[in-house]
Amino acid sequence: MVYPLTTGFHWGSLDFRWYIEGCCSIPSYANTDSGFHDINRFITLGTHPGTDNIAIPDYVEAVSSGREMEGTTPIQVSQTLHACSDKALQIFNQFPMAAEKELKRTLGDIRAMAYMGKYYAHKIRGATELALYRNNKKEQHRSRAVDEMTQAASYWDLYTNTALNQYHNPIDLNRNILVDWQALRKDVQKDIAIAIAGADFPQEMAPENTVLFIRNPDSDRAQHDLNIIAVLGTKGISIDGRFIPGLGLNVQTVDPGSADEARK
Image 1 (spheres, helix red, strand yellow):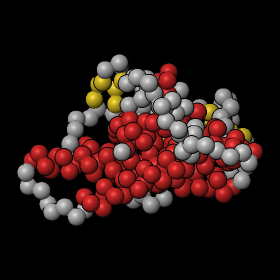
Image 2 (cartoon, rainbow, N blue to C red):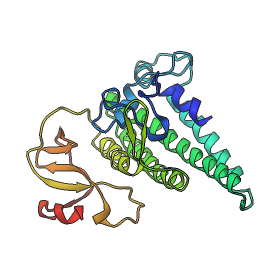
Image 3 (cartoon, rainbow, N blue to C red):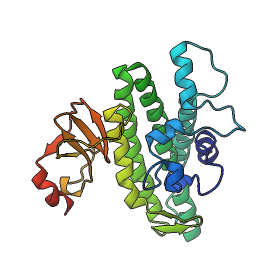
């Protein structure tokens, strides 16, 4: 159920517009340089016309206006994805250790797809909470968005680490899409930064050069393994070249001179 639930909600009509296993497409359809469908694209992209799924902008508008909704809400899609994925993992954990190669591969696929389902369940809820925050500025929604995207990043790691044991990476697909699970990890981390920032993104350059490292707070990865994904200035924060003014963020900062060392 992970595939139809996710793609029914986040719809790309052709394979080069949506590749669920990599959360990506051609860059022009993703509206990102890497082709990764970030939290912003999960807000803006519509649903499959054959479903009764309610797109995030329509859901936010209905909530803000008090209008009754007919159809499956983004929250319900997220909840169903959680339920399906949790059930698969529960059943999987009851299986004895498999010795036969084909069975081991099949069970590995089930585990990977369940983790992928958890990733999208958290991402859909996080995107919905972020859209609600942008609409009503209630801090509870931004906080929930950050929490959801942090959990999503953890499940991305579980998903890709499992899949890497079974499949080649990177893989060059039809329609000029190169999917690299490991390289896409930095885009997954950027989603956390976008949720932290909360605001929409004016296209300006940040005035300062203080480096920010943003990561899952439960991660035990060393600082030098992290990606530099944001730059903090005295007037705001720049994420991937996009400037958001007037934000004070509770994240770890380092001197710009440490950037080269961090990249090693």
